[in-house]
Length: 358
Image (tube, rainbow, N blue to C red; front, top):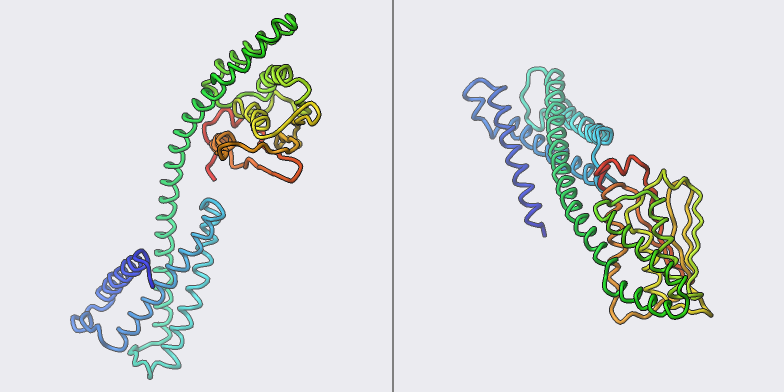
């Protein structure tokens, strides 16, 4: 019925209640007879109420923290809000129970005290102080836990970044890509030597770009578009009228940054996963959404692949973006088109290794 984790949590909190109760009893009650009188109605009442207040406060505080962490990170602002909500539960609850026990039902419970009013306020102050202590310790614990998780995520992301860089480079300088390019070049040498010369120049500039930027995970949008222009030229030569790639970007290209080879990956992804011909060409459009993002969109005519797609390229891009920003890479597929929206990063992103982790 209860998990081992829940039982361990309950036993730990019960142990804390016992320790705190004994410490308070030893501190407040100085006579030896009073210290060892654990089974009087008064002691039993305060023990049970301490148990109730501790358990309710702790569990409610846990729930608020977990709820906030699902939305995002713990911050000073939402931590203070959690503190206020928890105290908003504890104060009315303790006030109600202490008032009923010390005034209307004092005789029935068997509580012994000389001044119920003074006892009420002492109990309230004690409950508030203990509640504050529990809440702050709990918030501190989860803050430290969050920090450790963020550090671990950052280390994992660094490792993934290094892996993605080399995977990306290996994919782009693959024998398959080079083989197709050389095949196209061979046929061009017999058909159109001028075009073959242009093709060689673009192929060389593409590989130079890849090699020059293999250590840079972010490049300016202008550099990426210059490389993409050469790549598009080669694709147009290779596929002729079967592929149409149009770029319409209106933002200042030097002011924005994107992960290296991300646009090329998305274009190649469209070519890989769709049928196209001169009669039914593949139309790929690259444009911007204000100053926030780029959208790469193609008409959809899905190719049936022999092996199930792993979406390695898309996952690669998502992981690389997660290293720099909380903005999401969005993928949208409808019956007649497929599009990927990637955030535009400003210069500040290119100068820092990590802004935050979602």
